Length: 161
Image (cartoon, rainbow, N blue to C red; front, side):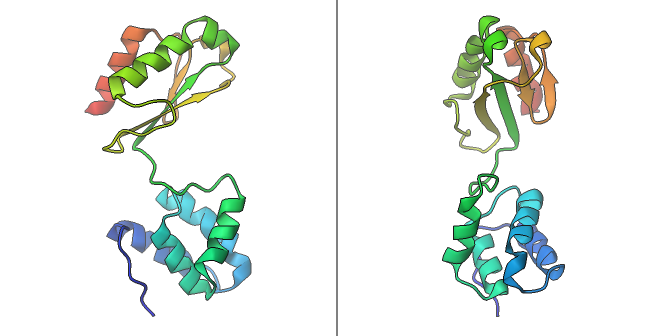
């Protein structure tokens, strides 16, 4: 039986279908399926929940019940670039708060938000464990240390390309 899909891209739907092919349609496979969808698609969309619940022959609320229990599952589409600004003690003392304010101003978003075009998300973290490089910013998986306000513009302009 085909499920009506509204917001998934063809590529996302394809990835989900390939994931399901690797699992028996048994309820005990729900968490591994959700983990794999999160890993490959980036989040658990309402359409993914429909597809998974149809495949496992269980209710959508059952799928949501399991997925919302665990903090690791995300339900909104991730931004292309994730920016984390460290505000641990050392980074804060060395200007991390000014870096965060600069990112907020240049991106026109507040901490914890995404740009409308889903190009950037911005979050603060308590500590990245790189105090010797303070203040520290992580963009995607790349660490930028000893950053100043002028370098924020440079980082964003490189990402815009």
